[in-house]
Length: 380
Image (tube, rainbow, N blue to C red; front, side):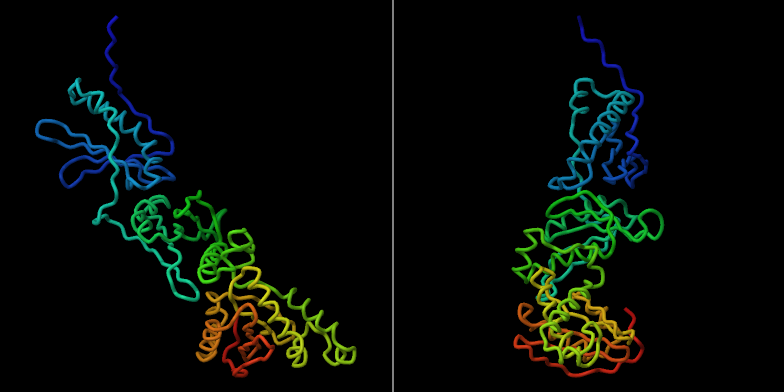
């Protein structure tokens, strides 16, 4: 029995997550572009005239070495084949080449040098040696989805070879207010997720802290990094420092303890004998616990003696030192470059109208340029 002729298709139903648009190119050809709600631009079907014949070109978006090109192709190819078959039937295509046309794989189409887009990105540097250690691509909703940005920047991301993410804008309203969508793209791809600014800072700190810190790198491999939720503007270590101060006080003779008073209160006596040494011990402990290098901030801006202690990493010190004299900022930056975090510490005392940076050496000796008067009160 002869094989019945194939019935020509008359309609194509797109998947619900795919939309199509039609545009006329400068050469007069018609381009049908297909977009996926998550993957962005899947590809194009270009219909043009070639003499008296109709030419149909199918392109899948992305570089051939981009792993996501195959995923886009898996969705786009059935659409391309179905539409090509319809166009072929309507234009009276050669039946001897019909099968080949219907099964041809759409060609990968990387973005050209004249692509009409400008994507912002940033290279993150190591806190200590200034080497580039991470790459952030900033997504603009006008340009497309996170995957669109990853596709357009694929060549640059591979060229740099740095850990890379595509970061969307922070939402101001709705269920994800205060969060941004984040897509990890290199070296390991992960599904997009919502993060706060503090959580993304913690991810970057895990990268910058490892670069010049082999101890931190080993702990990172063991998944010992701190909870990102605690790392927004420094780690609150008040309870730890106060506990250390109380243990120091308990080891002192009773008469000395009565002279010092409450070890949790900032007085000149407790500051010298208990709080600064305890803060130094905690700074070293934080370094050993893989938080990386940092400054121990003793915050008493309310002037009441109730001190809060924060372990602040180098990349957060500009905010900590806002509205402080240039010489204080320079002192802290210089200390961070030379101190040994295993045996030494940098303590910054912040009072209502003054600030003081203290270098605690391995033998317990404290070096400082003294209190520096401030103008407006610092706001944390």
